[in-house]
Image 1 (spheres, rainbow over the protein chains, first blue to last red):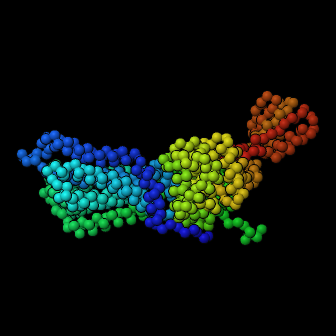
Image 2: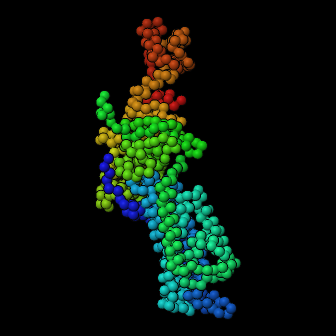
Image 3: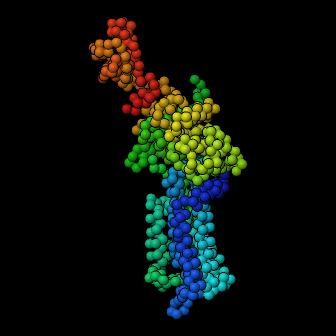
Amino acid sequence: MADPKSPGYVSSAMRVFDLSVSEMLWSRRTIFMALVVGAPVLISMFLRLLDALGAPVFRVNGMQMAGPAIFGLMIWVFYLRFTIPVLGVFYGTSLIADEVEDKTITYLFTRPIPKGAVLLGKYLAYMACTVFVVLPSVVIVYLCIVPMRGSLGGSFIDLVKDLFLLAIGLAVYGAVFAVIGARFKRPLLVGLIFIFGWEQMALAFPGYLKKFTVAYYLQALVPHAMPNDTVVSLIQGIFHENPSLPEALFWLSAILLSFLWFAAVSVERKEYVLEQ
Amino acid sequence: MDAAAIPAPIVAAEHVSKWYGQVIGLNDVSVVVPPGVTGLLGPNGAGKSTFMKLITGQLKPSKGTITVLGEPIWRNPKIYFHVGFCPEQDAFYERMTGLEWVRALVRLNGLTDKEADEAAQRALAAVDLMEAAGKKIGAYSKGMRQRVKMAQALVHDPKLLILDEPLSGMDPIGRRKTIRLIREWGRAGKSIIVSSHILHEIESMTSNILLINNGRILAEGDVHHIRDLIDTHPHTVYVRAQDPRRIAREFLDNPEDDVRSMRFEPGAVVVETGKPDAFYARVTRMAASGEFGTIDEVTSPDDNLQAVFQYLVK
C-alpha cells in the first residue's frame, strides 16, 4: 500500500501548533494567566502612581529603595517563585489533558502524524501563549518601576537577562509538567506539590537535594540579589549556593530535552479512554 | 470460488478482548469485515464504541490482534492516510469555522495550505455544508455539526471510512441526506463501517451487518444469513382471523408447533413459537382448509431487521 508522504516530525508539530495556539490562547486558563500576570503589572502601576504623588514607596530603614532593586525583588517574588512555575504547572499538565477532557484528541490522534508530534505542537503553543503574555508584562513592570530613582538604560541588560531566564523557566517547567501530565492521574495536584512542596523543601536543605529541582538552576541565572522576604527564603538564603552559569544552562537544557522526549514517548504509548 | 478472487478484508480482528480495569469492553472477538458498507449494530453499551476505538487505533487490544487494510493499527499513524474516522462525541474547536477546522485537520495529512483549502472545500461541499463553511462551529446546529465531523473524516479521500453513530441527533431530512451520502460513497468504492443502535438506519444503508452485544459479536454477514439464525429463536407471529380463539385452540392442540406463549388482540391472536417454519406451514394448511373461518392476515415482525436485532440481543 503506497502511502502519501508524511509530514516530518517537526512539520507535524508545527501544524498542530497552528491548530492549537488560538484555542489555547482563548481557553479558560487564559483568564487565570491574565490574573497571574496582570497582578504585578497593576502593582507596579500603583507603586509608580504613589511615587509620583510623593508617597514613601519601599522605604527600608529610612532608605528608599531604588527602582532597579524593586524590579529585582518583583522578578524574584512574582515571576520566578510564582508566575513561571504556576503557569508551567497549569499549562504543562494540560497539554493533552485538555484535549482529552474536551474529547477533541480523537481528531489529532487519527491523523498520519506521531502522537509525540501532537504533544510537541501543543507544547510549542503553550510556549507561544505564555512567553508572549509573560514577557510583555515584565517589560511593563520594568518601565513602571525602574525609572523610580533608577535609569532604564542602566538596567537594560538585567531586563534582557530576566526575559531570557523567564522564557527558559517557562520552557523547562512546561517540559517537566508535560511529563507529569502524561504520566499521572492527578497531574495538577502532583505539579503543585512539586513546585510548592518539593522545590521549596529541597532548596531549604544543604546538600545535593536541591540539584533535583528546576529552581536551583534557574536561580543561578537571576541577575538580582535573592530577597529574604519569608522564613523559607531566609533559610534558603543561608544555604544558597549557585551553580555556575554554564552548569546551570547545561542542566536546564538537559532537563528540557529529556523531559520533553519522555513526555512525547509517554503520549505515544498511552491509551486515552474518553469518558462516554 | 478462486481464493485469489476473495477480496482482502478491510478489518480483521483475531480473538480481541479489551478490558477497562475490571470491566470488559470486548470479549474474545474474532471477525473479518469485507470491503463495502458494513453496519455495526448493537444497543448502547454493547461494545460498539470500544470496537470502533480499537479499529481506529485509539485503544490497544488487551488481547488479540487487529489489522486494518492489512496492517496493524495501534501506533501505526501512516494508516490514517487511508482511514477516516467520524467519532460519536459532539466535540469541536468551537471558535473555528467549519472550513478552518477541516482545513487545519487535513493539513496534518501533509497537504500544503492550498491543497488543504481545496480538499476542505470539496469535503464540505460533499456533506452539503459549503454555505455554512465560514460560520463558527459553535453556531452550527446538531445536524451541521454531524456533517462537519463527516467532512473531516472524508477530507483526505480515505479508502476506509469509520463512522460512529453518524445519524445521532440528526433531523429526519438530515438523516435521509446522510444515508444517501453513505450509500453513494459505498457505490463509489469506499469501504465504510458505520455503527448505530437503530436498525432501520443501518438497514437503509447496507445489508451487511455485524451484531454486537455484551462485548461479543453475535452474528455477522448478510442480513439474509442472519435471518436464518433467528430461526433458532422464538418468533412472534400475528394472525388476524374471523375466529382467533378457535385458531388458538388448534395451535395449543399441536405441540409440534412449539407454541410458547399466546395473547389476544382485537380480532387477532399473537403467538410466540419456537418452530416458525412448522408454524407457518400449519397456518397455511388451516387457511386452505377453510375449517377455521377466514384467516385475513399473517404477519411477523421477524420479517424486518429490527426483529432480527431484538431476537439476537436478547
